[in-house]
Amino acid sequence: MQLGLDRVTLIPARIPPHKAIEDEPGAEHRLELCRLSIRGDEERFDVSDVEIVRDGPSYTVDTLKELHSRAPDHELFLIVGGDIAAGLPDWRAPEQVLSLATLAVAKRRGTSRAAVDDALHRLRGGERARFFRMPRIGISSTMLRDRVRAGQPIKYYVPDAAVSYIARHRLYARIGSVR
Image (cartoon, rainbow, N blue to C red; front, side):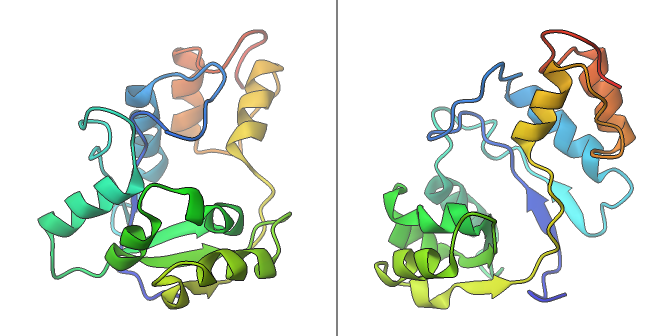
């Protein structure tokens, strides 16, 4: 593995501070979808409710502080797409984020490496960022929500358990059905 990680932890936000989602199903549903999505692969992945149980907006710096206090000897990585990395200077306490975790950046269509480099060079600790290759899979959360709203299938895009959960709870659907 390029980053040499022992585990990857999925951490759904309780209240995303910068991204309003239309027809947002709620933090508990997103937490359960994460749990269902890693089922059978808990050796490599886990899910944390650290942001769900904390009041207020889900700021990454607060989450990293909490994770660091729980396991001060563990090296933390924050995995983001290039588009997110390019916006890091606008985050709450971005230099503290970079002091608590190594930023691991995957290329994202529509964001140049130069834009990411420029953003990171403006921040103390940005030089520690690590870039890694990831296959382009052409799936986004927006695309999946749009498919559900349009009554188009999402099977094969997400694990079957998540498809069933979304259908059972009628998440994201305005019209049509989830398949």
